[in-house]
Image (tube, rainbow, N blue to C red):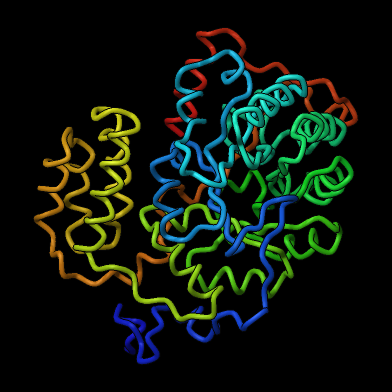
Length: 409
């Protein structure tokens, strides 16, 4: 067993799995900054919008570690327009968050257009349209990953956002398609380009796949060859070296990092290093991880309040400690903590000097390997040229339940 396989850095100083051991850092001038109208993003690395995850506390951590662009979790247009308190909290950020990036969820062009107009008036620097969420509570209303199956409806949504955004760049994020029988990513790229989107991000899995199997990076290359706007590749970026492999193999203009950074916000420091031509340092040992977790917890409590912030940190504590010796046995207790001292006391029973476990680098922390049959509204695919927006929750009670469900994942 060599150094890379037993969890210590190899002689070169690179902490890498056998898959990525021979990937060199970026050469000078090899990659360009990602340009979205007036935004220059370097490194060309985007924190993926993730429901219940990319709130301001986590975005601020990722920004400090080196993410180029950090997108909010999806914010429902109707909730925002109806002044839902949780929706507005999730869309908020202090002045130091620059650039400020919001992902919009909606299936009515009037709603998403008006939301973008208000966001721009509020100083937002970038907006993204969610056309890729695969969860049933979204697709069953005809939203998220269901929308690109109706290109004319997608066109109306993008057109409305671009028309209300002024100089603020609008991007879209999609999946490959509904399932293997309904592929939509190339049509989505064409629509995004024709309607004035500044870029398109592709999670290279279908909605039916959820997060199972390998991402089809070949689809990212196909999309890049088919459009002239920037293409961002998403899927299976677990390490900084994966981002380089994805960009080199597909020619895409940047990467979107999702599950790989859960409980590992320092991944963005490693990404910044490799794009600047440096070999990154090994990840922190358990003591260093706990310090990041403590910082994250304090930010969550300041943003959401002590009780709600600590409750949300339960899942994070599991993600941060995944793979360390004794963490599985502690997980049940971590999921019941009510105070920060209690959380830290449980973690204090583990070995603070233990190096970061190599096996945990590529371990999924949030989503399992199951697949699904995508639920759509009755008759949704009968006329794919129909551009009529599907019905989504509108009453105050519906919106409150909707927001809570999205936060729960």
